[in-house]
Length: 215
Image 1 (cartoon, one colour):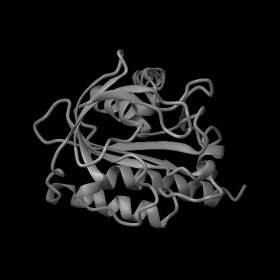
Image 2 (cartoon, helix red, strand yellow):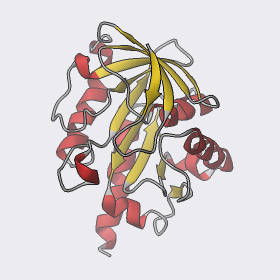
Image 3 (cartoon, rainbow, N blue to C red):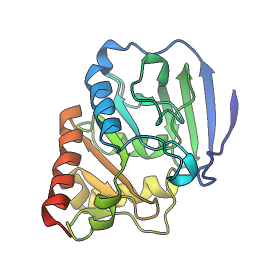
Image 4 (spheres, helix red, strand yellow):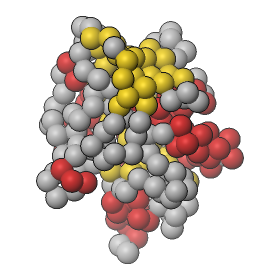
């Protein structure tokens, strides 16, 4: 199946080649799924009527072992679920970022942020986990904390956002920090690392810094 993906927020449009298939093996996703559950409990992933027009927010992914381009990512509009099963994860087989094209298979269509995840995995083989959350306090204080930020005119989930991630990573700050605020995507923050703990703790430490400032 091939079609254009247009999430409810009306910004992202990519060509999806999706094959309905069985869920990915759940055992290797244990650490990823544990962190996803914690991030939901912290309100960094979720779905609330009063936020973003009631659209679900947040997604996580994990690089496939032995696959230079493939990764597993949470399915579209799963943010409202407190806990996920294998049926809410899907496999990205390939992303042609420049052509705005995603190839995937699994039980559910992939997150609209798939291009951003794909770019981060492309940038370094050491990046094995990517967490995209919505953290209003952290997003608003990102520049004060010295966190890398994408330009506010760059829309989320687009080839332009992927290119922005590449520029920031190659500039050095993003590669060193492992966290970035998405200037054009309200409350959006992305963290990544070699392990699920690396990505998750990067987020937690940044949030603690915000709370410690008290401003």
